[in-house]
Amino acid sequence: MAIKSRRLREIPLAFAMLGPSLLVLLTFVLYPLGKAVWLGQQTCDVQGKNCKSVGWGQYTNVVKSDQFQHALWVTVKFAMITVPIGLVLGVGLAILADKQLRGMRFFRTIFSSTIATSVAVASLMWLFLLQPSVGVLANLSWLHNIFPVIKEPGLLNDSGTALWSVGISSIWANLGFTFILVTAGLQSVPKEMHESAYVDGAGGWMRFTNVTLPLISPTLLFTTVVLTSRAFQAYGEMDLLTNGGPIPQDSTTSVTYLIYGSSSIIKNNDGLQAAVAVLLFVILLALSALQFRGFGKRVHYGS
Image (tube, rainbow, N blue to C red; front, side, top):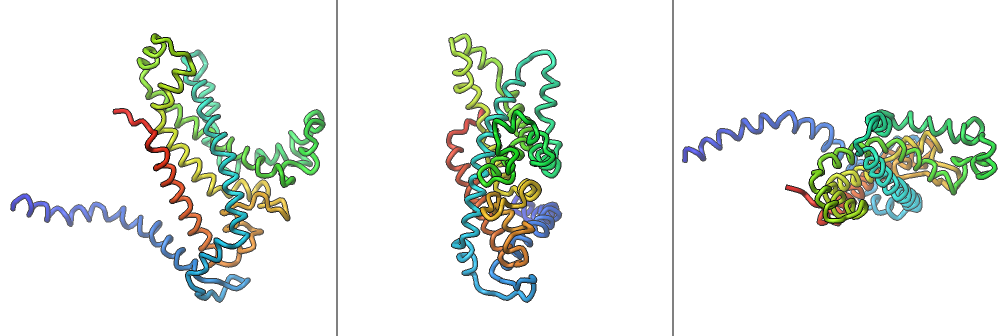
């Protein structure tokens, strides 16, 4: 009875300690989410005013709309471009930098430097490289002769290359983040296991696939989930490099650009914007759960 009574007295203290965190969670997460869900069943006029409820069926109408389906497909393609390539490059650079060689700290600094670069800065850098009139790469005569599209109409202005060009910018900007995480995972792999595998006659590729890869699999899973979430929420690259275009194909109009873009067809309709944002949240939640469920069983958590 004494133990039970003491536990009951500790409950108010526990809630008091959790109070600040709960207040922040309610103010900046749960309340905005609930507000967005409620606003998603409303529609507004072209000026963004006189909003009125049209029912929860608006979510279904948004899902069925051609604009949302097109934006979702663009987002999926963007994720399929940036996540696998970014992950492979990050792992490759981390393995190269994991060697105990003189001067390797310099290369580690270079490889991880993009983590300090914002999306805006990275996008402007690639804009100065790819912009047809003043871009450095676009005005190299030998490169222009090999790839005429780089100058006319320009990689960012061609519907077939715009999404890839934006994807390259995103990959470069996120490469430092991936490199640092994978490097930390590699440094946690016991060297004795590599030495034992080497003594047993395992080659470099076999040691990587049977020793290194399983032991860094938790890091790879986390990195994949984060990169996927970033890809589905990418906005700055599309806005600065292509403004959702090129028009009329809207090759880089992602779901986030459909919500926030200056040339989006729903830019003045708060209800539709909220509905798309909530649907994006649901998609990301389901996708993350699917990734953890699908790949989590193959992850090795060492004791």
